[in-house]
Image 1: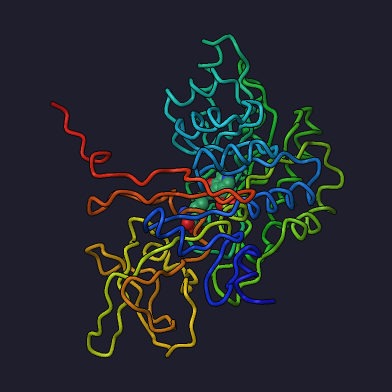
Image 2: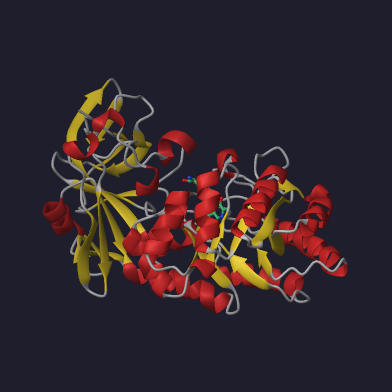
Length: 418
Ligand code: LLP
């Protein structure tokens, strides 16, 4: 299969020009300016439906942190997604985008009292509790509201997801969850609290997992705990196994599918009556999106060739902080001389690069490049560093091109209180 289609089947060259869902990316860049995030609605639908087909009885709670554009969250909500949230802001957004409260799960080690109250008032499906103190505070708040607060405890199964250390979350030394070896006691204590209703077990081992075998180990441990809790009369209704399926970034990456994950887990889950919850983020949004950027200048310095573009680490920080590889292709592909270049942004940091020593066709000032696999943790992690307004976002869906976030202007950032 043609390489581009392995990233996103709706991405193709026609007469040397790059199109997404039949829309010319050059035309989009001209119309909306750059840097520009462009998402494919069909891809998002396909990916969500692949999860639904692989896990027909599960609730798929989209991890809003991957891409919090309200139009995208609404689209997923309409397809039947719930939401995995990690802040009061994400709660606000998920509700506004039409996700029913009874499909919202809330994780995070540092929920503030305001955030806890908002989620109790909204009556969300369950809190994924990360510490004993959080549990105690929820119990007190439950008393004040005259409610039983539904919770799962996030357990840390101590498995190595074989991913970048910054995004591995399920190992013993990480800040997340409670140690699975202490979980039984935590559950017993929680089940005695008057204003707490224990309803689930939560675990999330990490992100960008390409080799899915660690899921087996983690879910085995979780099911082992589930069996023990059921035997103790603690009614576990939900088993939330988190997100984390990896996607193709490098040309040689092979991404696992939801179906493969379902097949791996089927034998382990066969005796489990609880409803399954999954929290995918990247595997739905990552390859739905690209970042379009324009070449500003070219320069040679010593032996190095630099392609200086208008998207920087303020727009896409993944290469800078995880040394992440993003495949980059020209919007106009021609049979030109190939060069090895550092593709860098305008930010005043040496770490501001999109690619190092990358082989690309020789580019010209004013031309466009497309940075692939940018739909998840792209815009979501962008910033105003160097006082640069954040990019615009466009969604192509059902043949329509929709501006789903306007480009910011300077006044959006410069707010002086008098
Ligand atoms: N559930 C929980 C509790 C999580 O912490 C996360 C991601 C997810 C679900 C979704 O994981 P996904 O399916 O997207 O892998 N900024 C990093 C990724 C950080 C992931 C944080 N947690 C990156 O750009 O690679």
